[in-house]
Length: 129
Image (tube, rainbow, N blue to C red):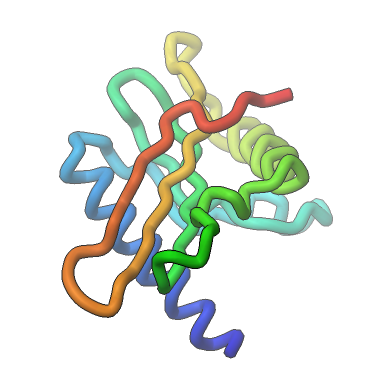
C-alpha cells in the first residue's frame, strides 16, 4: 500500500504542476527538503510564482470521490505549521526580493476511475502563524 500511496501522490503532484503552468504560474522548485541537515523533517511539494507572489503549494490527492472527505482536509494545523517552518528555512537558503509576497496554497486533486481529474486550487488556504 505505501508504494501505491506514493504513486498516487506523485501523480497528483504532476497533475498539479501541469495545472499551475496552464494557469500561467511559473514553477520555481518542487519536492524540496530544506530542513535536511538541520533535523527538520518534511517536504515542500511545489513552489511557484503567481505574478509577484511566491506560492508554497501543498498538493493533496485522493483516488476516489464520494468518501465525504476532500483532499485538503488532510492539511491539518500541524501540517500547516510544518509547511510554514520549512518555508522559512527555504527562504533563508533562497532569499527573495522584498517586493515578492508569500502565499500558502493547497491544490486538491481528486482522481476518478475515468475521465479528467478534478483539480481545485485554494489560494491563500492558510496563513503563517
